[in-house]
Image (cartoon, rainbow, N blue to C red; front, side, top):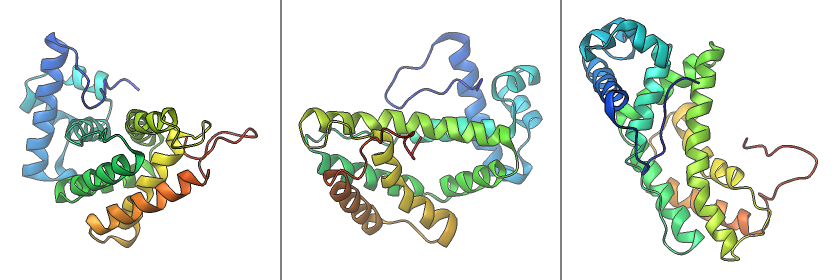
Length: 211
């Protein structure tokens, strides 16, 4: 994937690359506000950002790549908790996810990209990369819990975080109902119990289902 995503809380590169990214992300957000997803084009974004169209295509390749970049920027506001316990971390993260997807614009973005990913392998790869980065970053709190002895040593962080996120995406994409704090708390409670019971330990006979 050519898009230069960076994890929340980590420094982004400076100089021209950073300025280009900031201009493009701002242009995508403004274009979405004016024309919606259906009216978003690479040409419009390049013109609004004052960036050569070839540069935009080279770095982001498609409209959905731009959307994933915007989601990366917006998700940087989702804090990664370090409360000292897995229970506290899961609850705080779940509530932050609920608040993130409580915004109508964020829901519309993820819905549009998921729909496009079902038709276009390139978009699917962009979306997979976005979620892989989020899972890897949030997995640090599971690794800390393993280090504290709260979880079995072979617990798979990706499985734990995938299970935490699953109820949100079922609610958003399948039942198409709002997400709220009750959903966040129930998801965190269920995942905590399952993790303590060893439900997310790595299996020797195959890859983790969250990967």
